[in-house]
Length: 277
Image 1: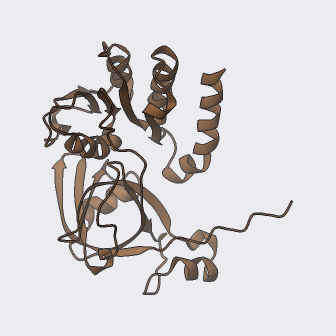
Image 2 (image 1 turned 90 degrees about the vertical axis):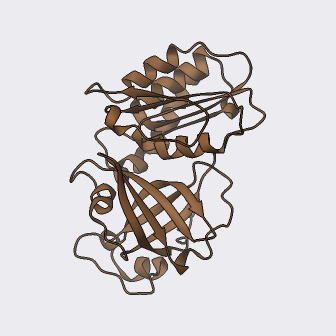
């Protein structure tokens, strides 16, 4: 069988850092702007829209204008940009301002340290947006659960809910200092990890919830281990149809994004097979 041709790289956009601020001790907000966002979609359909930031490996610089096709054609693979995926917290087409929130844990990772030390005027390249979930107004109620990595998407979804919508929202953070204000009438249940394994409090909260009557729409995202547990609980124990679930592991303990993304498809397929058996 002939090999499938490589998919051409998507067009990358460029933006400049307009401002940056710390929301909590471990959450950093970076606002991007500039004319490079002029062709960004005016309206974003989903509340979990994301972009893939492109970072040059150490010691590598790229010619401007930034061109992914040229980079892949002219440079060896180990000099291609490294991608990191982040949810769009807000997008304002009138000012061309795109807001991203980053979890920062000191020098760990790539994007977190960048966000912690970025300067106004700095240029960043990215691809996107992608996305698939938004609150379904025909659902009787909503369940949202996630750790810090899912907080921007959960916050965006809560703020998009119509007035009077019923929802249970659980967000796990390390402690009370990591809580954020969300512009929604839905009261968020903040779960404090306090040194416990990530996701432990979320699993307890969701499995212990007295589900309201009616059809729920569910959004569960975050570390892959607890996501797997809740996927099984929601699909098997609660018998929620697949089409009413948005469930994904944004990251996995012990893996960086490159390693996790490389294995995520197979991991998800294995989980599905185990839970359908």
